[in-house]
Amino acid sequence: FTEKWALNNHMKLHTGQKPFKCTWPTCHYSFLTASAMKDHFRTHTGEKPFKCDECNFASTTQSHLTRHKRVHTGEKPYRCPWC
Image 1 (spheres, rainbow, N blue to C red):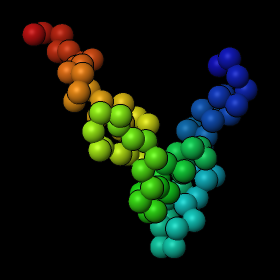
Image 2 (image 1 turned 45 degrees about the vertical axis):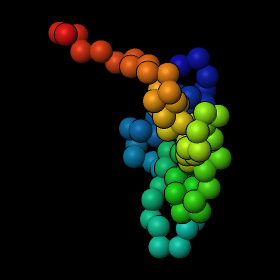
Image 3 (image 1 turned 90 degrees about the horizontal axis):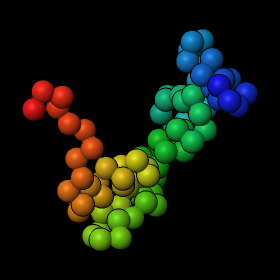
Image 4 (image 1 turned 180 degrees about the vertical axis):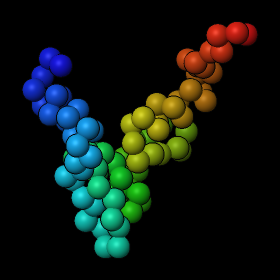
């Protein structure tokens, strides 16, 4: 690991440590990182800050928006190795 924080986060995978707990009432999810907890929390609030600039799609995470944008570009980054 090139950064100490990255090693520390990685080590939590081995210990099962998930220090970031969702504060939504009745939700018992916990997360390895604060950013993962923040992404999850948006599922409770309905906040969708990541907007497509080509249609009205909006998402709770940047990764979901990136995946959606492939609808417009036709990009298919994963290929079957046998076809």
